[in-house]
Figure 1 (cartoon, rainbow, N blue to C red):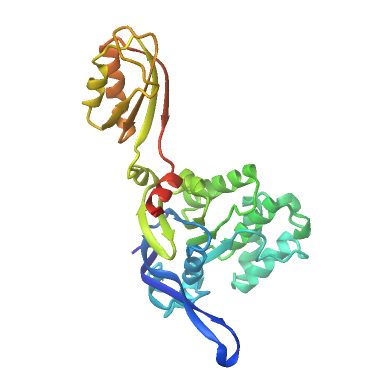
Figure 2: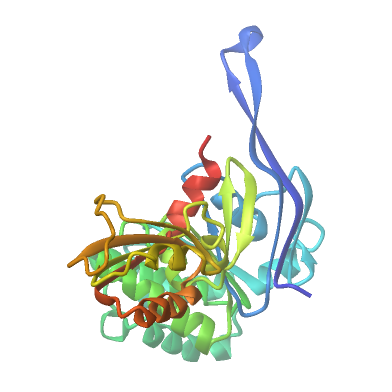
Length: 331
């Protein structure tokens, strides 16, 4: 059994224009036969631009929205027919400053949500103490939330999302609006504390593809309500048409070295962009290789060493998830 399963999930909205008899309606497809699953204890990224359907997906999974058709299950429970069971095992944290009461203190906010989620009264104090300490707000817990920075509010949001001790946590744009340093701290917290230590299953939605590349086990690309790819970040990057670029500055390169490099398995192309004529003993030449994966690098270095070619500098650039997403959605 998977933690999350979506099968042919579809959600549409009706948009109306005009008034009375002149009113016209049109259908907006937010999710179009979406299929993916999330394993237990996995940090799964749902990636795409604004309007791709990420928030709609999380709202369906936490029972805030009904699907138009298809099925969605959380820990085997159907979000339509077993909504109560789903609500006991899932929670959602949204980015920004929603879902908090600014005039209440941090502790009062958590106390309020503990009552909403029917946390047993004999467990409330210890759970609040644990969560406040977990997100580093012990010294500020009795201050009104309106005095908090954006980063502190987001940490409190995460504590609120853990108040019912959910097995599955849906994080919808959790670093939205945070500065670079605070966003990095939030990502580390999600990966280290929630997934590795507390063994939570986390579905992370974001349009910041670099952060998913940094922390997610697997990701899905969502574009205009459609899933266009699902895999690990590393495997997705291998799909690039452009491959990994390896730029070398070498000296004393022998004339036949280009053909030797081109013959290596996994090397797509070899070029000398600056137009140097390759002759024996050339003082310095820039070579650019396009390779399928970094595992070919030892063979490249061995080939250069066998011909006594000296490597002065080396720069390796692999495609990012953003590069792959643009490749898959362009044209």
